[in-house]
Length: 290
Image (cartoon, rainbow, N blue to C red; front, side, top):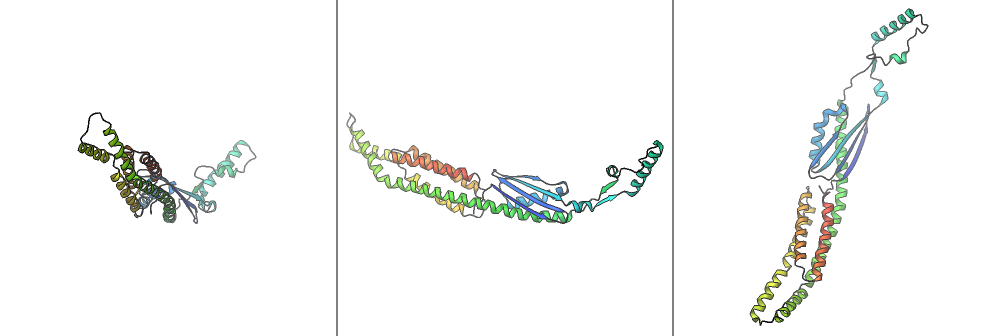
């Protein structure tokens, strides 16, 4: 099953200390291009996150963003007061009031809370949150791959429809080949017969054969059929096939151009144009295939 490189996934988890949320976005890119955004407490996970992404994805520009929303209740439980500093500040406030004769002997406690070092936040151990974040990343990656496969299935259906269109064009040209060859033979003979100088009948046959060989499209039609069969085979591979499909689009386009250059009748020219339209429609979508 082919995968698209365009997808989005999000997974969240509530822990004792807050909420973890992974957001993964990917778009088409020639190679794997990773962009990570992690909170400061989770920076240590960056190598592990990169490894997980590389093991799961092969191509695409991928943005992986982790958010951690702390629980206010859990955060306040780890605030501590420097009691010795608080006592010294209280004495200083009362001494200042006595020296100035001010009646505001009681300190403004709210303002004092902002005094540097009076209230400290205990540095937490985020080991459990780190483990939870890695596990949650695995879930988000599974969701991203599922989204890529779903989009890939839609692309595969579109490609199959265009391949059927190519086969129809090839079949129509083949059906007209006897008529095309007979018409070309007749026109060549008439032109040679109209020459002022008499032409040897054997020479006429040679010229007709050579002209028909130059305009013969059997090989192009055969190769178009071979490429269509190869594309169907590649679509069934369980591996990244975007680059291989892109190469096959180039081969299809080459045969369509050759067919157009040999177009001696309207039917062949129209078929070549229609083939190029179908190939271009596939090529645009294959740019998103991993």
